Every structure is written in C-alpha cells, then in structure tokens.
Amino acid sequence: MQKQTIACIINPKSGVRQNKNLQDEILSTLDTDRYHIEFFETKRRGHATELAEKIVSEGYDILLVCGGDGTINEAVQPIVNKDILLGIIPTGSGNGLSMHTGIGREHTEAIHIINRQKILKIDCIRYGDKFLINLAGIGFDGFLTKIIARKTYRGFWLYIWLFIRYFWTYKPSTYYIETNTESIKGRYNMIEIANGPMYGYNFEVVPGADIADGIIDILLLKKTPIWRILLDSVKLMKNKWEQISWAKRIQCTSVSIQSDAPLKMHVDGEYVDQNVTSIAFQILPKSINFIIP
Image: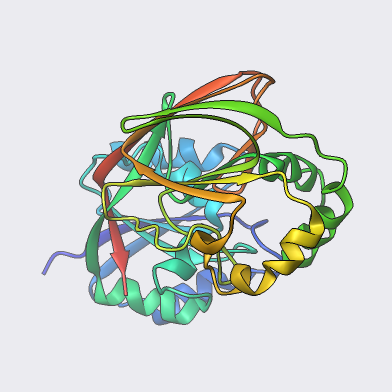
C-alpha cells in the first residue's frame, strides 16, 4: 500500500511551553507504516503561508500544523477549497480551534487522531483576499491583541490583566453593520465574528457557533459599566449571552462592518495591522477538509 504524504509545519515559538522534542514525539507515535512525513519550521510571521503554498503545489496528502490558532490561520490560506487534508497538533497558548473540535491540548492524542483520520468538511470565512478559520474580533478585543503582540509572554492571565487595566479608558466606536438579513447601527465595545465559538482556555465567547453549519455567528457587546459585568458574571461563566441585556447575537452568511474610526481587529488571535474603516466577511461552506477526533 502506498503511503500518504504528510507535510508538517512547526512553529517553534508557538505557545508558552517548549516544543523542542515535538518531532521525535510525532515520529514515535505516528503510524509510519501508513504515512511518510516531512518537517518544515517557520522562521517568521507569514512564513507558514509560504510553506503551505509550496506544500500544496507539491501535492502532499496532508498538511499537519503544529502551532496555535494564528499559525493555523497562516497555513490554511492556500488550502481553502483544495483536496489536501488539514490536521493540527496544538502548541499555542489558547488553542481555541483545537479545544472546540475535541482535539484538546495533548500532543500524543492529537497524533493518534491523525492516525485514525476521520474527516469533517468545515467552513471558513473570507475577508478581503484572506480567510479566517475560527474567530475575529473588532474593537476592544482587537485593541488588546495589538498590545499583546508586543509582549514576549502570552497567556490567559496576561489577557485578564490587560482587560482590567484598559477597560476603563477604552472608547468604543460607532459601527454600521449590514448583513444579508438586517442592518444595525450602534456603539459597541466589541464585535465578535465567529466561525467557531472558542478563543481557548475552554472559554466560549460565542456559544453555539459551529464550524460546519454554513453560518457566521456575530456577537455585539455594548460599552457596559463594570458593576453590570460583575452582576452578569454568573451568566457569563455559563455562556448565557442571550440573557445579557448589553449583548446582541445575530446569524448571517455575509456581513459588512463600517466604523467612524480605523478598525482595531484581530483574526484568529493575531492583530491585523491595517488602516481601514470598513471590512466585509463571507462564509465559505465546507471549504476545508479537517481531521477531527
């Protein structure tokens, strides 16, 4: 039987723990009677996209990405609507996509999932000439991500500390939101555009979002006093956004967002450095062949 070929992209700087022995771990667990694997390491931001373009052109069967959501985002850019399979081994700090899909955080189990090779066709979301696979955030969320991008350390507690530090002074913009079903205008602290529901750390910011339902889920959060957030904290922890007066949930297949100020935005946890006041998103159903548990 001819072996399937795997091209494995490793981001050696991903996450908060060292991954020095990851290649050895993969080789010792992967079914090498079934697969032939080659390894590629990223050297800089954007390098995963370049590597993935080469991998697609050379006809590999599987693209295996070892990194967090940002590395996965880079790697999927050339594989949308292609036959190649996508597998992931989570080495990021949050690992939102991996946690949501049940792959979890453990490397060994993620490799066993590749061995079993169960496939699900999942959606992605187009924005401009690029794609997101999990979540994008506009407003305060994007603002915090820009600050985090300058830090050498990432993690849940850094995000919480920065949230507390800057929450009081952040001034929300006015947004004009046009979906294929409705029009909305308002001042929002955060706008979450979700293919999947989870940033990571088992926190679902848009509960119920499904990466394979052909729908964009959007959560709009108004500027809210801290006492109101504390009052609603139990609902927040239980992901009961529909019971929170300062949150609005909508579903659509396309959306355009315009602001009265340049957009502060992250895509899959990475700050998008651009000077624009409008952006559009469109769902691309069943556009990626994803290896799931």
